[in-house]
Image (cartoon, rainbow, N blue to C red; front, side, top):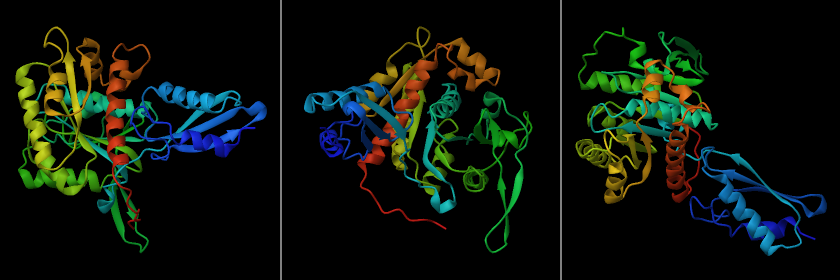
Amino acid sequence: MVTESQILDKLRTVLDPEIGRSLSDLEMIRSVNVGPNQSITVTLDLPTPAYPERQRLTDAVKSTISQSLPEAGAVEVAYTSNVRGLMSGGTIGLRAKNVIAVGSGKGGVGKSTIAASLAYGLQSLGCRVGLMDADVYGPSIPHMVGAHGRPAAVKHKTSTGEEFERIEPVIANGLRVISMGYFVQPDQAVIWRGPLLHRAITQFLKDTDWGELDYLIIDLPPGTGDVSLTLSQTIGLAGAIVVCTPQQVALLDAMKAISMFRQVKIPILGLVENMSGDIFGRGGARKKAEEMGIPFLGELPIDAGIRIRGDDGQIASLFSEENPSRAALLGICEQAAMQIARQVLAAPRMPTLEIL
């Protein structure tokens, strides 16, 4: 007769195919149940709902049990998920497990498209996500997500009765969004120096009622400017994603962005090649990522449908079943989430302190 303790003992040695460490080390074994006819149900707790190709893990578990415990019956593997994260925004009241900055060395490479797609993609996979447009001078996120109107300032009270205000994010297809574009007219220019820019970014992070998030995606302005420095000084980011197109001139600018992130101690989650195909070429970002020793998160082929949906404020619809770019976009989302999971799981566990 197979016992739960026997099964647990065998499962502890199974290596997670994505992270390369044992299920025991990763604390992913949630429960084991033995049912009628020696049937077995194993429930594993994934570090993110964006875990890719679960079938590989399922096969590894089933193979281990069937080979080491031949008397076992049918094996079923079920999954739950609990996003692992740094919770680094607690000092300013930001309840986001992971904050991801999306940047580029130059404009025109589709950085905002990738940022918005990353947010909607992670949401479609079951994550709680917010999207912050930090491109104060050229905010494009409101148009891309198709949501307009000025966010409300709602009054709250502390336990001592003191009143304070929080900005309610705009909800766009279930996604919580904040942008300077919601506070100015579409044709109005924002002409600010560094201190005002710093204040606006800090307010978006600190005074917006984001709720509890698994991921907060921040769309950075193009280039290497004040915003990244503000973020590095205000919160601890899970990492940055750099977007570029395949041609050499764009890659040179992407390298500058990578250098900037490294200087301000923001981890590089990886490089994304956008608009990959005949017009701009293909494979330049992958090659550059290999040369620089950073992860390559995927390529998104050039597709007029992506541009059309962005122009129409329908970025969320990129994740509909019929969209041909859906698989490539989801692959980028999964790789980004797994890069964070690897970093978090590799770090030594620290005691959790509740910040009141």
